[in-house]
Length: 246
Picture 1: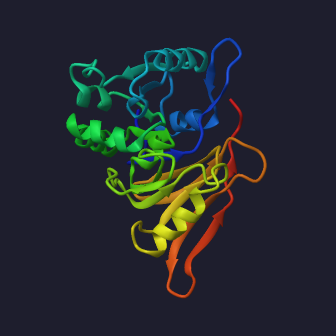
Picture 2: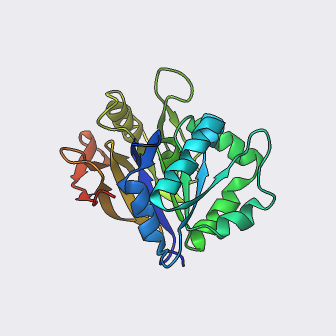
């Protein structure tokens, strides 16, 4: 099975503390699987940890979280070399590709070396759901805000651009994110930018934003930031649909 057309779920969440494991996949990851249409078998999810250097301990925890969730999780490592012989073919056989957080600048550089962009685009166009958190959200867009270069947030603008927008992650938990997004949209560094509070995800069919979803109760929301000639920018708040807790 595959999603009904190209689908991306871009998030600022996806994990929760585990009971017998370090962490478990929370509602956003489960929603990515639901969007894929996988049923009648164990869903296939590929975990990509490039943004944090493919740490083996975290990859192990990702596989364990998959065991708890009932997913077949494969880890795609690029350090020190790709661990799969046919990466494009493998991605086409998946239901979901989940990209972990870390340094989006480093992630994009390593992906470019391995020419991963075309393989990911082919998977997306074939109905494999592309998803991820933080750096694993920004990568699908034109760019966004990042601490990849140091403590002071900067813009990254060389994303894969499957989605023709900017992306702002951790919008409610990191105070410097919102003002930088506003400045970058106002000066044209970023186009219209879609932002998520922690625990919130944005669902796209092709390049159309169709829904905001949340795995958190409370004030968490999504936002669309647009350049406004009079006031610099305007910000529209989108109330997300609360996902069931898995």
